[in-house]
Image (tube, rainbow, N blue to C red; front, side, top):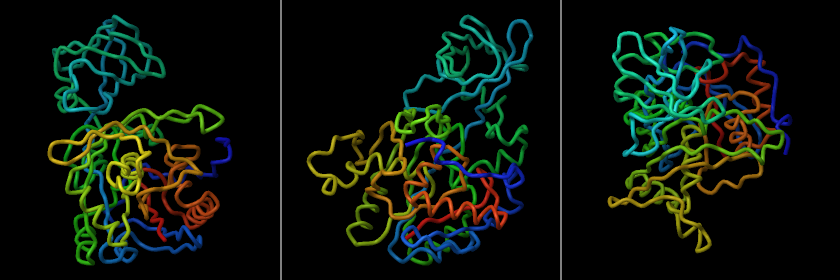
Length: 358
């Protein structure tokens, strides 16, 4: 299965490099995954595609201001991005980072205005390094960091991005990128879903390398995903179970939710998975689950848990495009993307949305 087969023409002027003027004011393209039928709509009307008893699962991770500008002892400026959280006992003094510019093991990095010293312990490859800080890196990010916007935006973060590159329901700090399918969601739209009888529940997956690392192999089946830490509360598991047993649908708000639920489906619905299923999550005392998801979903994958997907328009050749293609079917998805480009929808993180449904 070749990477070159999963691309499309994306005009640069359709890439959203800034958030829409009003959160929730975006457009929505609905695609029926069985018939391929398309419908142009607005995000505020998303409840029209749900039925009473359906469940929508959201990712409540919170983006940290993980981008830090540092200086080498020579005075040369470098950039590091603190990577996502992987567990509650993670060491925030010794941590992995992505870096831009040349650094080497032994380098001592400083931040203007701070007494902290960040020592490079090891260069790990693929633009990653392990560092040791004299101060808690979370505190340094909060006080001196900026929002790590995707590189394609080609600009620095502004105070508006601190608010808008974050979901309205973000709770649990740990991501280095937003679960972008959720950026168009508002409290008012959530209320409209609840008023229709849709169940709303949450999980946490800290977004990081696993979502945004590019595919560097020609055969996509050889691509390896990085692990991303997740937690699924007991109440979310119970809501999903009730929904499925009642014959209603489970929708994922975004690819991060999709990967989490599909990775852990056998722990959520063991009676469906059967005895041959290998346990992938750790069950907590309160009945919740936690683990490290490294699932790569690409065309040919059989979805076990989700019945609908709300997502963005994704970049060519990306892992998230592969996931959307697996769910909608590549021919359906490509037709939808071509239609969206013709109708001048906005693409990528700050862009318009798509709902893929039956």
